[in-house]
Length: 222
Image (cartoon, rainbow, N blue to C red; front, side):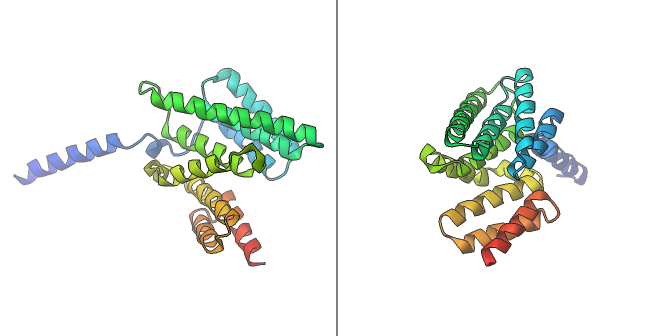
């Protein structure tokens, strides 16, 4: 094979390889402006801002009217309702909101399964991975009598094994590790938890997930 023929063949192979990479390699995380804006309120709600939870839910419900088949929007609605349950002023409010949240989270998984089973449906890898992470995190933190902890652990385990995770942003990958560390803490595996948190902080040292990892590490050593 001549040198020019070799170069041509190599360039063709590289082109095929690049085309075979998932779209998330280019797009990284979900960048829909409406989801990005509502997501910021959701994060504030996770950190304890009750008004932000309500605003996030309002925005995600508006997005659902525009994108009724989007499993990520459905997952965030369920997660917001679970946060309302967390913040409920009485037992009835807590159970009503959390119960609705669980139903909407389950619905997001059903929606996602249908979309991914349909090869003709245009659903990005980033949407798939973020939907699973949102549902997994919610399941890990709702009361145990809803019996969703094992499902949350399963979703997170599958996320960590998914090769498409490598194409997500450092912050997203750090979030997966922080969630895995929370599971390790629940199962009384402090060494595993510390290792995961250190890796998360290395991935996202100046970001939200890196800061969360640092806070959790500090709490473990107290």
